Image (cartoon, rainbow, N blue to C red; front, top):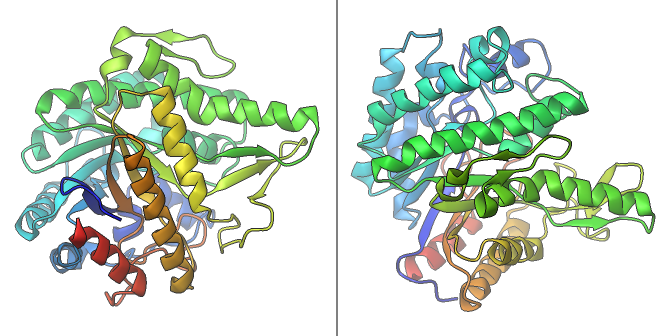
Length: 400
């Protein structure tokens, strides 16, 4: 493998995963209600960030995607916590000092409780068009001098599915109509934030979770479900970037010509493919592949498929592997999958696909949204000892 010298190597994780849930967040409320596993202090990054960033840099991982947690910065509407502001500025300054370029994510599954509960969150038009832009502008003004790039909302599709379609995340709704409302609202919020951030001179990346979809049986119903899920996870926002028309299934198109120019990069979050059955249920794919502790089968070839498909649909849009990793105790398996995935990214570059970087999720073993600390995904363990997969990542990153 021979990656270009300009290729970005990094890691990615949310604040909840690395710092634990914010006291004022809806995720903390869900923990207290026993709806999600307790996150504690995450992997301790809040206190060890300077050493952790130096550890990443020492292994050639010189980019990090992290979350500036809204519920810490604004625990009550209109009141900003100066301690949290100083903390996140210290983290960003430590990244700069370590030679790590920080990509600031503004929202990653967790919201302030006052926003998601009292003000009804993104699906509420006033909340989306008043409270959210106010937060985006505050973060831009407060931290814009220290960030290398922006991610407005991590995986809006996954957030909508997990939160409004019975996926086990706040607000813990299971209603198909409310799901489509939330999905549209999250995409609109993502586009609006990107438009605000692009004028600051730093690249803005969308990050979407994508999975190759396969009909798991020969029924017409399985194919119908597969095509519907494909519209939900991919087509709706691709249409917005390509044609200026956001087309969430079951809702009228929202047309804005500026959708086309909202993002500098399209980030892909990829872990697995999905088998779709005629009754609407899912199963691991390939059917005979090894299944990890989260219930799906990590499959490197699916990453190549996703990269080629997005490049075909959006040929002029630079791509970023914004999150890719394997949750497992078996680091030999992780290492083999990582090597295969990187070989396929290298092949994609040879095929002329403009892939700008690869961020491993996660850097250090962190909290998992479904399994707590029972599904380690890091290149380093929580004692900060490097695994063999970290050695592979360092070898390839340094080589480029």
